[in-house]
Image (tube, rainbow, N blue to C red; front, side, top):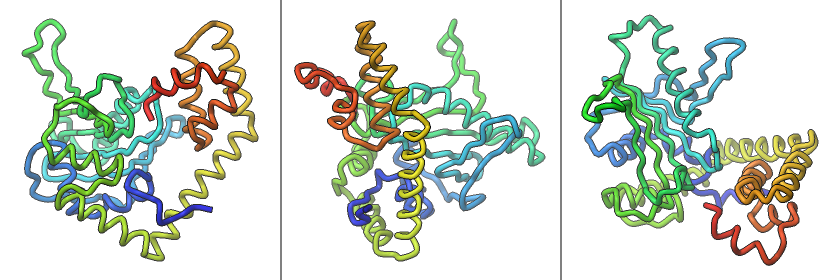
Length: 279
């Protein structure tokens, strides 16, 4: 049974509900981008982009815009090795969607994709990783295609971001209230927990996730992981083992200890692997 009162902003459904408050989403973007934003709007309550019947569709967590920029904010709780390519695909489909609505190239807005990760996507200890296209031969030349990809890490250890942004990331990570903004976020989380309509929505989403995990196991996902890890052990591949533990935790919604139990990781190896896994 899901304990609704234990669900925090780290939960995807809760994050989506809270960030559909324009004032909170606006303050979130201002902290991430380090600039003032006049106002934002949401073109649609939930945004799904289907470009072609043979192409992978995407459902955007938070899709909003201001006068000159479209923003896509995604909360990432899982360890995705393909995360950079996911950001590229999201950005491309958003542009295609804008062009199909009659925009000319010159009319394309700035396109910023933001992934808020509860793990370090690049293992460098930074809170913030920002990517834009520049010339490899001359780093002073920017392509200026009006696109940016931003990855935030709630578990960063570097002194690389302003305090307001660090407070926001800390709140996502451990629920620490440290300023007016995080207090507003926490008040909203509590209000959502107590709202019958939103409680039902969150419970439905969480149950769907659990049902999908059961279906995946039924179709042999577990066996695939187990076979993969056995092969990895035979090859002495520590990287394969760690990746399999992370993927098992994500797809089956289990703890690191349970994942290690399932994969029969030797007791004398567990502390070493645990220290290398970004939770």
